[in-house]
Amino acid sequence: MIGVLVSGNGTNLQALIDDGLPISAVAANRKDAYALVRAREAGIATATFSLDCHESREERDLLMATWLEEHGVELVVLAGYMHLLTEPFLRRFPERIVNVHPSLLPAFPGAHAIRDAVAAGANPTGVTVHYVDRGLDTGQVLAQERVALEPKSTLEERIHAVEHRLLPRVVRELCPAP
Image (cartoon, rainbow, N blue to C red; front, side, top):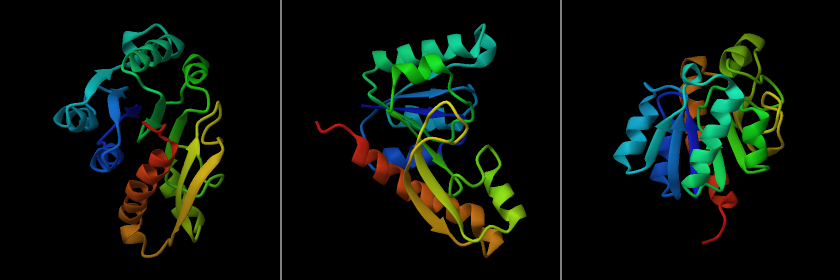
């Protein structure tokens, strides 16, 4: 079973749902994340783990990991999750956490990858699906796909289209056989 971590609108979550992947739980770090609505509409268990409700990130991540395990999660997918995970969470799901990132890593890690690629004139840019480790977008690359920088007016839309195709494909390959 898959657990998905989200922070925002949830279009990558929706791509996973639409692909029919076995998602048992969706956790957010923001109670206003629209991704939670998408999950509920799909009949998936949801919970919010806001930092302001916990003494530390480590405590929050430990409780979130426990909640995911209680929902049978074996693989964790970060689908627009905008927090770094701490060691207590990483230890609970070793080599079982993947992230989608809007650049050709190792180029342009972090929260502003598209903006940074445009500013640098990086052509092509692209999308990476990678394992999550302690670093910021430094884990082993599982798949990448190039996206032409031009036309810049549609770059974000074209990157998202690749994310919505590439992430479900890689997650399906990683899912344990039933």
